[in-house]
Image (cartoon, rainbow, N blue to C red):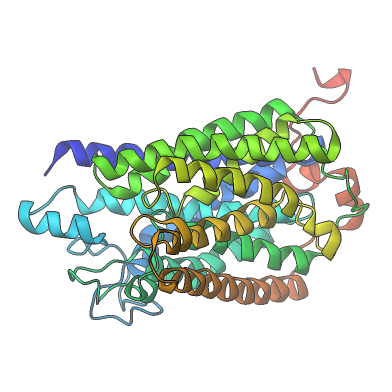
Amino acid sequence: MDQGNTAFVLFSAALVLLMTPGLAFFYGGMVKAKSVVSMMMLSWGSLGLVGVLWVIYGYAVSFASSDSPTFIGIPGWFGIDTASIGLNAETAAALEETASSYPTMAFVAFQATFAIITVALISGAIADRAKFGAWMIFAGIWATIVYFPVANWVFNYGAAEDNSDGGWLVQLGVIDFAGGTAVHINAGAAGLALALVLGKRFGFSKGITQPHNVPLTLLGVALLWFGWFGFNAGSELGADGVASIAFINTLAAPSAAMLGWVLVEKIRHGKATSIGAGSGAVAGLVAITPACASLDPIWGMVLGVIAGALCALAIDLKFALGFDDSLDVVGIHLVGGIVGTLFIGAFGRDVGFAFGNDFSQLAKQAVGAGAVLVYSFVIAFAIGWIIEKTIGFRVKAEDEIAGIDTVVHGEEAYAFGADKG
């Protein structure tokens, strides 16, 4: 075992796990004061549920062995097969020479954290109006029939040197280093579906989403950005030059995206806001995720500026098109994920058409983005619709208006009134 690489993968897993509580803070600060507990519990619930499902069968489906149907990733067994491990081509080749670089369980732990946060990301689209129990049912089913199979498509490189026994998007040649499709497009499409199923909040209009606690949201951004270094650089599964490129791009792109977002705000509204700066950073992190190992840092910053500006404009789509994506999961994660995934086909090192290559890589990237978007949206809509029509997904109108923390969880985030000390 290479103890350095083992430590790198395990530490990266811990960083990515921290992102889910960070997401809870990010989302929690942006909702009403009387809904913040409910909002944060959607992320914490995802952590508990998906963490358990991953060990029982999630890893088995996501990294099915080569004798299993790799399109859907159903392996025919449960639990963790310690004899198999999903690897990228470079790591697989290295392991052939060194016997083993890190334990299988280190990789299992690392990928578990991706599954957890992907599910949690969806919850921002249904803030202020979702039942916790209904959310948990949705999260478990969606993780099982959407995230785990899609992770197989995107992250399962298989054991063969030519990836011929990997996921179908891997075999197609789609480049997604750390999850632009499997995580962000996947979650963004599902968020859009649930926003349509649950409908608009009462009083839906511009200004309804004024954050109740800006510092809480910015704390969430800080934790997300910190954890994202493990998300992107850790996806190399080794402490080497590729991880270093991914790391610097994870600094450069969101920094540039922050500037792009606040510039759009300044031009459109006359003020650059702190929430805009934080959202811009997240948009840049989303966009650079699939491309962090494929771009030189200068192009990483170009992607960041573009993503920051486009996502700043995209968050208004919900008002133009009439869907209530409460915390801009569509505008940031779906749009940012698509931009970053397609950008590889244009400006990716050795594959982008801007550098004299053909358009084949762009076509592959478009197929990957489109396949995940459609699959996730359709299945998420179906799951959400069935839950809404059976047990109900949305809370009662009077509870939504009053704030749902006390009704759903019996708690309040803040002590309102002198009698509560």
